[in-house]
Structures are given as structure tokens and as C-alpha cells.
Image 1 (cartoon, helix red, strand yellow):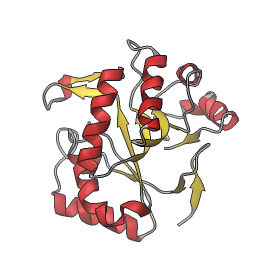
Image 2 (image 1 turned 45 degrees about the vertical axis):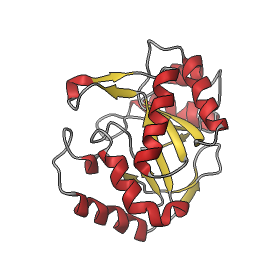
Image 3 (image 1 turned 180 degrees about the vertical axis):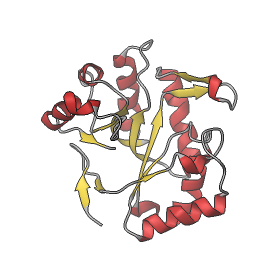
Image 4 (image 1 turned 90 degrees about the horizontal axis):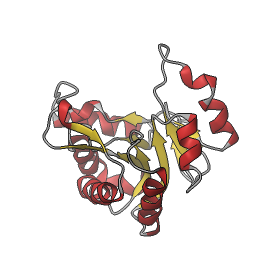
Length: 204
């Protein structure tokens, strides 16, 4: 396995990461069973993967719980990347809303730490831009929990160049997780250059 530094951070991540959306199961994916999911996670670790990306909304907390249980014996050897900014009232797709306010982030980080069974998250990402909340409020809250030791570094997901430029006025982000595939290569038109110029790692 090869490893690289993630953006302007001291996180050395495997070039292949483990995306933990599917192991969360319903409502996004079929449920293959926790035992099967745990085997997949450990197999990835045994093959050299040290970067595990999840989010509270993946299975409404279930993905984080599986990672926390499975990787607890090797916690100091892996990098947890999780997210904030999506909330739900009940466990259905129609109940998911964007919320990157101070109050929401403070609640979410403690919930994620509990589910992951850890006292810190290596990379904490804003899952989706919340256009109703000032970027200053979002970043200032992230910096607050960073000072408290609950997170190491800050990233964003699904942000445009303009949105990255705006939030970077208030604090440093080290990564962008965009929608990128053979069917959607739009980040090549601007986001890639911006990230290179500003030492923002791309997770795709």
C-alpha cells in the first residue's frame, strides 16, 4: 500500500481508503449484516488501508458504530474521517436536512465520538454546504472543537470553489471530498486547480 500526506496536514493516509457508506445499510443500501461488514473493514485494514471515511447519516449512525467496534483494537493505527451538517428527525430519506449551525455541530461531534468509541476524530468534514448558515459560524465552531481536542483537522465535502474560498477566510481546510467519477468530472474545471494551489487534498 502507498501512503500520502492529506493536503496541508500531518495525516498520512493510504491512497486507497475505505468508504463506509454501504455498511450503514438501510435506507441507502441493503443490509448485508454487521458480521460481514466487520470482515470487510478488517480485511481492508490487513491490506494496508488506514483511512476510513464515514458519516452520521450513513445508516443513521450505524456505519460509525460498526467502524468503532471493529477498529477499536487498532484505533491508534487508523484515521477516522467523519462528517457533520446533515440531520434527521426520523430515519427516512425525506427527513434529512442540512444544518451546519454551531448548536448542531456541537451535538453531532459528541454523538459521533460516542458511536465511534473514540475521544477524537482525525478528519471532520462538513458533509454538504448549508447556505442558510454563515460560513463564519460553521468554521468558528469547527475551530472551537478542534481546540478542545475533539477533532484534528477540518475538511469539506461537496463544496464549490467559491464555497471553499469563503470558508477559508475563517479557517483552514485540508481536504475536499467532491462528487467525482467518469460520469461527473466537473471538478477538473476549477476545483482541482484551486485545491493544488491551496494545499487542499482531494478525496475521491
